[in-house]
Image 1 (cartoon, one colour):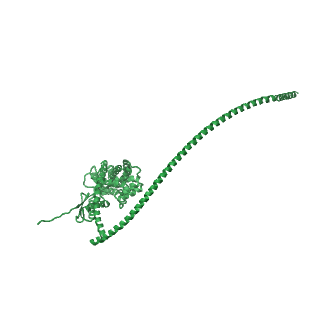
Image 2: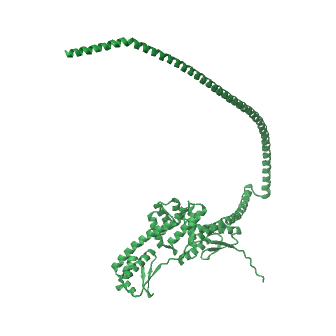
Length: 516
């Protein structure tokens, strides 16, 4: 019953709520309608205000665009007017030019007519002149008993002889003028280069003297029945001379490397005290390895001192071996260093590549170091080595051409050649054996005697001057000048010599009579 009462109560409540809701619906609807009408009125007023504002903005924007458009139209009208004015001016200018051209064409036509008349007159005159010339030629042939061709040939020969004489005289003048300028500048450059590069002039010898503390050590070096000294000579390839000279042994040999190995080996053997064939071979082999290492160190120090970079290790070793080579008694490494410095100085003065010049100067005589190819000239051999180890083409050409074995294709080549001659021609720098010296003098005289008109030739001043006596009946003064030049050119092409050679051509005419 209680549950029934509760359910009835809940249903009653729900029914009461529903009745209340449906009873209040008309009132709520009236309130909502009034609010909606109010909002609608406000929206209409706002819309009208926005509409008026937008219309005003549109009118303002339209007026602004219209004004801008009118300005643009006015500007374009002005440009069109200006263009029309320019076109009118050009048309006027063209009209004026056309009138001028027509006037010039008329003048040219008149001038052509005048030239045509003059050409006709000239043709008639030329015909008359040719007829007159033919008549004169016939008269001259009768008088001179010579044909035109014979007379022409005689005239040509006379002109040739005169032209040859004039050419020789003119060439002499040109050469003398060139000498006044070029020789002066060249001397200045060479003297400045020599002054800025100091060098020693010590001569290398083919013997080395090994000093001893006393003569008792000589016997130990010789050994029983000479076994020690024979073993030492066989291991080093050097002749060891033991004579009556007190406290000294002479090491003789043309190879400075072998002499140095023998000297150091002797020094170590004497210091060690154990001197016998087996020990000698051991010490010599050890010394040889030490010398090879020292050669590499000398090469490295040389390139570092000269500021040369990127040199191949094999070329560095060859540079080090130059220390133990000599040319005409001049140490090859000192000579190459001097040439490198001379080349650098001269290249700087001439505005060329200083680094390449120094490189070429250092490597120009590397062909003298190898001993396995004695047939190939050292310049060509050095060029092959430089090309093999990736040197610059200009450097290779300078190496190969410094004795004119190949054509010079680089500006560095004559610089290296000149600096090589400067280094070799310093007083006391080189020595020359007697046989080669006499042969060079005879070759010099024979070369001069090969020219036509030469009676006698004398090489004097140790081959630095050549006196040439010519027949006065077979050579004129002008031909003597030309002969001196030709001899100098042939000497430069065919001979190798230190320094320079002065060529003096002497032509003398003596008339002798006796009064009896």
